[in-house]
Length: 279
Image (cartoon, rainbow, N blue to C red; front, top):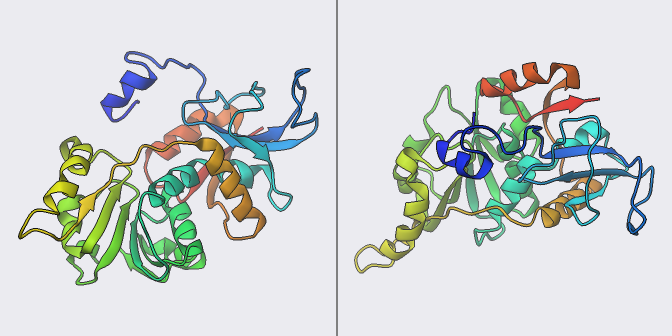
């Protein structure tokens, strides 16, 4: 559906530039070119590219320079495939904040692909994590590292008196205006979405300046990162998976023949973690 509309300028104005979707994968190498040196036929690999890989297909071709790596021995194909996309965005966004061990972070949407990855990555670097989710997922979110869980069906986190160094709105359903009172001096708000009236990129430009004005030196600001370097993300997540410090949350698995149903399910906005397509 190319939402928000602005994304159409990158993916295709009237129809997709790439007719075969899919950005992440996990599979076995069936053949290699004569100049390939780092991989062999039979290697199990996984990878990601947010510009698209056409990976929702039986076969695909890649350069060995793509963002891919061999699958950790402790992961299945399904676990490996589900490990990258959400974690890539979470990793990039978190890296834009100068967090110190013990500082307080709130993750809104802690059971999505980005949110469930963010909770684990933040826990890994020693943050004190408060996670926002629904009733059915409170135990899941605790199990992946949240220090505290807020059930949004019972409590509006924006009405809390708690203060945070970083608020990560992984689903873009809140706003800087609502979250600003919860931020410590110098605190950061990041959303995975453009925000109301596409305000977040603009706020990312002006809030660092406004926060330094005389009489308004709270330093509270919006950061609107552009995720980059998929290769670095893949290698980092591989390392954490090998250490047993990261595990993708998988909601459902669909065979390739039912991919339309998989997309329809995801579009409902009710999934927990990731949905995997299998062959």
